[in-house]
Length: 237
Image (cartoon, rainbow, N blue to C red; front, side, top):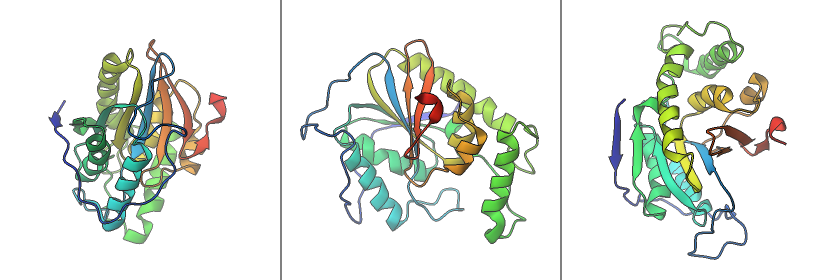
């Protein structure tokens, strides 16, 4: 497993957006005390970039989104920030980490699914990715990567990363932020959440840039997902 830890650098931003605080009623400059056992998790899709260039840095819009995310989480009890090793993911998480004086831990195991879209016209690429994800979420052709990385191969790198994350944080309190990628999070959280997240729900509520899946990691290692891109998950109620 290829992992690196880098100290956070305050990202230069083009603009600062006003956004509703993540925790209402929190006093400025003070972290609230976590309310109970377990570790709250925020799985975040990276901010906007000029996709599909793999290592493209955040666009001007993405810089604004990353700044807004950091502002929204300013008063949250953030205790850890993990990202993939892709630039767009690291830059997004770095804003949050810098605001809480935390390092960013980057790991290639949570990088985006390596789709092969070389022969697909740009206008049809989103449709093609949707078709592949729909088949995989439905339990079909999971060993088939359609010329790129297969669902089974993604599981093979996600699983040890997640197991290690659980070992390290299951007894923690506060909130952890994991910044990764839209397809990866849709595919892997649908199988990792202990409560049901149907394939239709995951596909219909695709994560926007800096969209968040809220979850809670219990001391017994169970992950309960409660909200997906602002929509309550029915099985969590």
